[in-house]
Length: 252
Ligand SMILES: Nc1ncnc2c1ncn2[C@@H]1O[C@H](COP(=O)(O)OP(=O)(O)O)[C@@H](O)[C@H]1O
Ligand SMILES: [Mg+2]
Image (cartoon, rainbow, N blue to C red; front, side, top):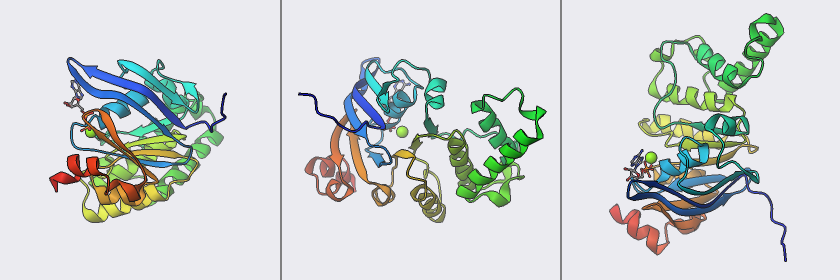
């Protein structure tokens, strides 16, 4: 009998990524519902970033499948996945530091705008673009920095800009890989609040090192260890799970 089940925003089936002899991601299957906030945690080297790379298309998995809203995207290149609604920021800063905040956003938006080669022919298009830039900067709290050169922004502000850049592609699913890494406690708190306030039409999968930050944001938690999922459940259950305690909390 076929049972109807709601289409997952992201479904990963039996995914593996092998580097030489190392199974960095090993038979991972998971489903993330539309609008869900899923936190992906686990010790260093667990395979979290590699899993993200396979979902985003930066890396081709060795085997297995990735679906975006029911569509098999496993063989699509990264830019096609972006066009279908997969957004991400990177662990390593990827903004142009000699350009202003506005210029970075213009570049980011033109990258996904089909009108890119004709954009400057129309004043309407330009004001449309400026309005979009205003909206994204408001969302991430950077409106007053629109004409600042990025190299003069604080580290936390650069992270906010990266988030604005990801949002500019109007993602349906957003992958954030340790966005709070390197931030001061107050910047971390500010960034968490921005993530919390993201609209719920965006499904969020976030890798977060700080367990308190992760659990405060999570609807659900997946714990990865040595490439395998060892826990998939609610934030309330994760701290009491015996295997998680052993491999994750056992270190503290
Ligand atoms: N491009 C690569 N080539 C070879 N090994 C890699 C590569 N990327 C990651 N690894 C290895 O795969 C494992 C998982 O890495 P990673 O996904 O970065 O873990 P995490 O993000 O959980 O810290 C680690 O042992 C890492 O050294
Ligand atoms: Mg990583």
